[in-house]
Image (cartoon, rainbow, N blue to C red; front, side, top):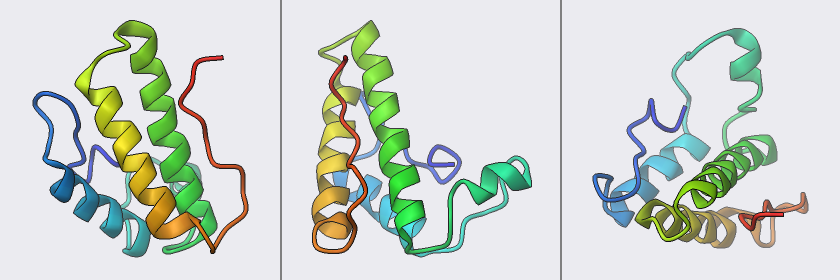
Length: 105
């Protein structure tokens, strides 16, 4: 979903302010229909804990997967920065689900 919305990180990715505009729209706006109904249900309602959780878990998973391949990649830095943004902007003081970790276990 995030890629479909134009969210890209790393060397050929977007600058932080543009990535965050996309993340803001993904959290607060209507999402385009991508894949099947079950996939769309996984994204929850707009501006909901389910939506934020899906976004955060997706980005954290992307980060962990990249860290296994190339720990120092710029994409890892970008994803972690964007997770911090989402955490501060939408999570703190609003939700209590466990925030995803990007560390390899």
